[in-house]
Length: 253
Image (tube, rainbow, N blue to C red; front, side, top):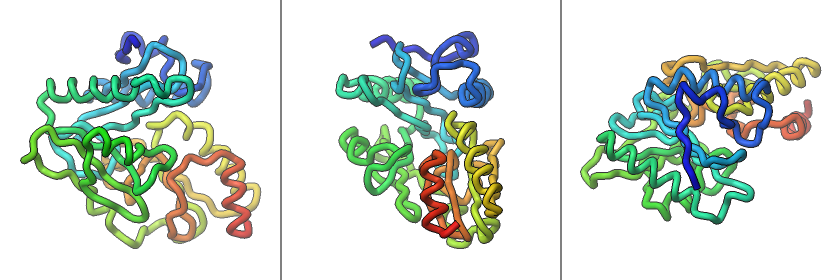
């Protein structure tokens, strides 16, 4: 499969947003605006020459929108191959290119966010271990920071201290959502669930991280989307209206 690297020159014309076909969709516009500002920071978005989920996105860890300490590493934002593209070795192709590129750039290794067991929107720990990744650090309730060092003496990455805090100020009253524009789906889902909460007079605070510094000091490992209720972490999985409806029902709201 031919691999295409997104640049300033082809960003507007290439299909980059998962299964979203319409370039005027708010999700596409949000994602491309976010990417445009990251390219000069060293972000690489590498995709198969197809319309669908077959891509890898990575960035020097110093510029990652994640609360980690991993200087000298390359941080993988997302590695996603699904649907008809699974089972053809495309994940390996994309990951191998990331390894090659990162070594060429003098990086110490790769870092990626995973979990104790396979979960949506996080890398599959079984697959990452198969590819040589190890767990570098953990964070409640199930997050794992995995890494692939290129040198056995390389420093071990870790989560920032902000993630280890058990008390999350600002999340104690109603729903609190932390999110970024790294994933296109948040551009559509966040306003929808905000509106659902408003119509039911349920307190809902959305905290949109719009700078790298904000994300790097976040109280949660997954800054793309993390939902709390009355101070308790609920989920990192981006919510559809149907999923959020179930949460409201469980909370008696």
